[in-house]
Amino acid sequence: MSKIIAIANQKGGVGKTTTAINLAASLAHLGQATLLIDMDPQSNATSGLGIDKNNLEKNIYNVLIDEIKLEDILKDTVMDWLDIAPATTDLSGAEVELVNMLDREIKLKNALEKFQKVYKYVIVDCPPSLGLLTINSLVASNAVIIPVQCEFFALEGLGQLSKTIFSLMQTYNLCLEGVLFTMVDSRTNLSQQVVDEVRNFFKEKVYETKIPRTVKLAEAPSFGKPALLYDPLGKGTQGYVNFAKEFLEKQNAIPNKELGK
Image 1: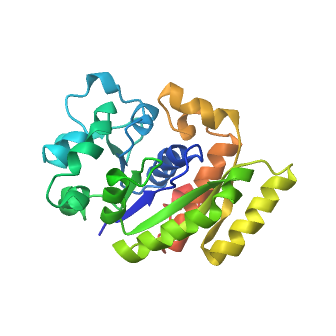
Image 2 (image 1 turned 90 degrees about the horizontal axis):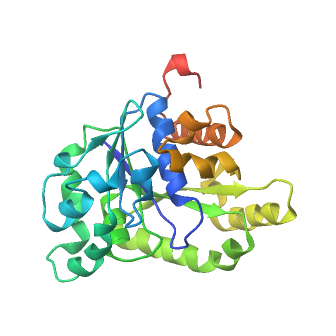
């Protein structure tokens, strides 16, 4: 059965889409059949994997609103073992249109039902909000990964974030897969302060891997490539590969032997 993971944080600018793209790409690199679903109207995950949004006849919006089949919108990507359900800015209208629809919270869950054995992992990139697109993503998922940026504002909103996430976990039967530190600058005391505070909140749910702040990670989406293809030896790239390996170890899923552990 597929494991469906929502990458969610109501705060923007925390590396959510970067994490979704590069976790999905790293899992594919490690031989895991993976689907990335772009549920953010900004559709940065779509363009970040080299998909031309202007030439898409149908996208995830049509799955949610017009109830077309998910398989009718899936696209190959620049990575083997990785497909994407793309988005365009049309998705911004879905928040309003879903309000008056029956079963509005389970549109994505229903669309994914027949894919439970097709992909090992499904990664869902959520918008930076708690609207119906995020609710659809969380209801469809088994678990949530929370990217947390190592800066002052992450600490400022930590109480609200933890309250929101645990409330959603109870309401939608989610589990917290883990918390990932992003944009870490190990040279600053602030980064270590954020790490300590977050660990106090989430205890053993915090991943050991930390993603460093690098220019190459920020540049890669503009070239339509995950970091693995844009900067294969970079610190940010290796951070996400190590994160994928840690993630797989916690699933008791061992990467392909030839790729190493």
